[in-house]
Length: 145
Image (cartoon, rainbow, N blue to C red; front, side, top):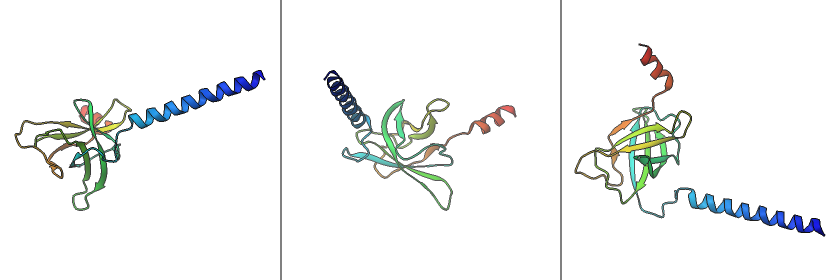
């Protein structure tokens, strides 16, 4: 009888932990379905090492969107990255998109650096100013020279 009560309590604890984990995941995963109207922008990069669909888009370190899709442009061999950012942001047309890493082994994300233009980006616009990733090997070789 004592073992049945112990098994019941243990089962209840496992159930509570599982439900809590599912609730945490659902509440903390970014909404990629598009229920909130977002601003869709396209940026072309020469290198996007480590960037993938679903990666974060940040301004001043604060997440404001995500990477929707990646594709290769056949004639220029550049990576076209489609971003979705909060629709209530008024980003200047000279906003720069930079591919960065969170620390040495962290996730790759896109950092947006707003410029000073008075013209505001609209959904479907291209970000002209971009900066791709730099490999550690190329940085070391530049340092040695």
